[in-house]
Length: 221
Image 1 (spheres, one colour):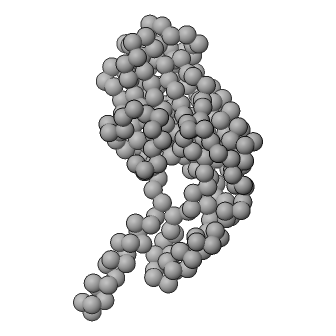
Image 2: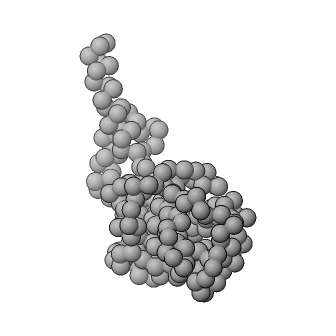
Image 3: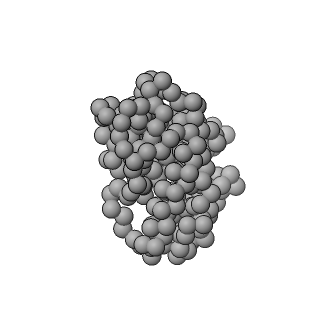
């Protein structure tokens, strides 16, 4: 019995280590943000986890307007068989549109820097089809072997995923007011041959935009 326990405990630890993280891992940071060391995992308004840091100066006394730069990719994306150029363009346009619609409910949008104005940049750092994490029923040795073989062959389910990195600064003096890193997950794709399309990630992008608006509404209203 003791031998079995010694064997089973490491196996269970390894299996749970394979489960997909709900937040961006440190090795997935793009380098867009200058400093990631202050980020802390918190819950967004929807309950989704997000890595975030906020300057105490971010309040309604200091900011009522937002200069939002067009959403862009960082670094330049590379299309693939699963994520083509048209999808990359659609995702970029959609999240830009949704952010403007939602953030406009919390702050007055403006095209120019000025007093009491935040300047915000939103970078899409990846659009991918990540291998889905293990299901509870797969946390047994024989199922784990099968899941690993399925993943290696490309047959395992994938999850439509978009990674964002966000930076907000004072539009006049450039002081950092906040930054965030968010992993947005959408629908499940059958395998690595299934094309990722905008509908597969739309709901996740909608939620992220609403969460951003809720954050600013709580801080500056």
